[in-house]
Image (cartoon, rainbow, N blue to C red; front, top):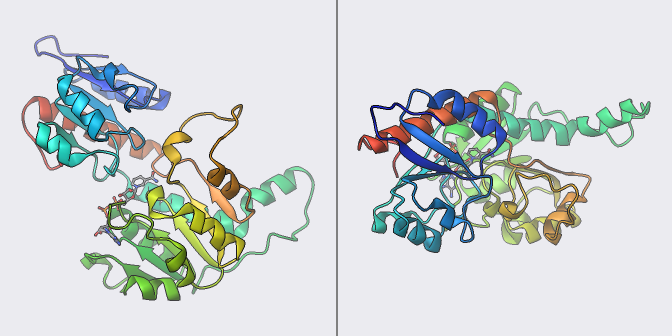
Length: 336
Ligand code: NAI
């Protein structure tokens, strides 16, 4: 917590706070008239009373700012929601606008961090380095079960070619892959790198499909039993975007019939109930998640695509600038 004594301090309730957030935000906040109160819990209907008396709430991907929470924030006097992430599918933006709460986000921090994580999922699933690591540790040098495929010349379908999707295209092009893309607004920088086609054609022709589009009400469960049927048998599906893009029950069925050959997930549709905490001594109640975890060809990480030092620094910088801009009534580009 730090502030410039000559200026009134902006009081910020920092929800879903982790030690690594505190470290990076505290190292940068000294120059600003901002005081943070770190709250470990996520912001939701139960914890919203904790926001009373604050000017701003600073939140992350799994804080739940639905209509009721936004209404309560407004009646508690909160004027600004500072998201420290790019996606804002967890905030009822329309109600914020109606009630005069401004919402800022961090549109770009380190797109390469997430794109590189998508590649880590592909490489681990394919070459099974996680299994090889354990085998060699135990003195087991048998290669049975570790057979992979050569990535060179494979066809990769990229859904969403914005900041992250285009960084991902650059990486897979470096591996010698052919790239198919689908995006309602094709990226001019990607026209020479990728062939833009319909979603249906992308599903039919891709060996690997990677999701890099935001979650909206129009594309919820875009990966469902119908679209899974359109994919190549044995396809590898990667999601580092938002869990709600995939219908998990349909995904499990696709894995059981072996229509889907590999799944790499950094996000999960019910992740807000599970992720970002040590639950190793709990009985996890989510049966879909538990079933998914049992497949040998499914690799799940707990929403860590963004988690590089460079990305954390950038997130903290931009979030602080957004809070200062709001306090100075300068609403820059990052306000929704
Ligand atoms: P961006 O806004 O730069 O690009 C998104 C692209 O998706 C745009 O080109 C847009 O036209 C396209 N798009 C929108 N709807 C689409 C649809 N139905 N089908 C195909 N394309 C569609 O966003 P950016 O920075 O590339 O981030 C993408 C997503 O990645 C975010 O919305 C967020 O959900 C996720 N993300 C995940 C992180 C992680 O740690 N795993 C961290 C940061 C973002």
